[in-house]
View 1: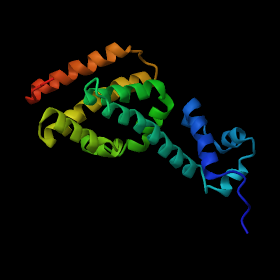
View 2 (view 1 turned 45 degrees about the vertical axis):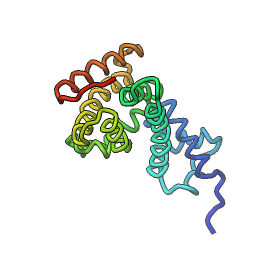
View 3 (view 1 turned 180 degrees about the horizontal axis):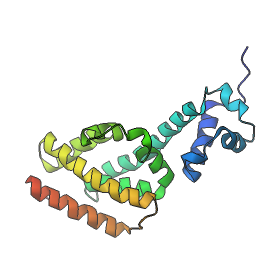
View 4 (view 1 turned 30 degrees about the vertical axis):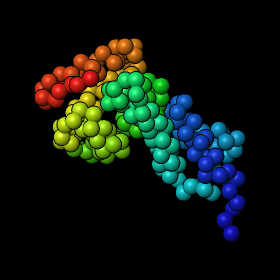
Length: 194
């Protein structure tokens, strides 16, 4: 009979998530996780087969946190929701730099060598593309192209923020996003109604 689990799966994942959120993925080991739980590392392995499984669950929890930012952006009525998606992507990088690095700056994505892989990077891709299509009354192809280009630009700013390479104010971020978006709209022939 296997030993009875001292901690639940959720307790272990929550503790691992806090370690990564506060100190980054490299700080998550069986030893640090056991210490966070006030135990040795051994009880972790009555629930998980290895640390890779724990990390997979932490990524799920990190995506849930990220999706809160994107959902907030898409439900905005005061500002353009599409602009807010880029802004909130960057705010996530500023506020949750370790989670941002885990999700968007890891070696996991080294296999994706083109922008066509973007849906694999962000599960909100289709939803945001439809928002752009409907908001700007354009084709889905134009919407996806616009979103992809703005995502690359936003990712650059977000990466600079997540690595503390640059610090931008909210106004600077919004102005940069507006400038690039307006340039793309003109280049693509998309009329800006509002």
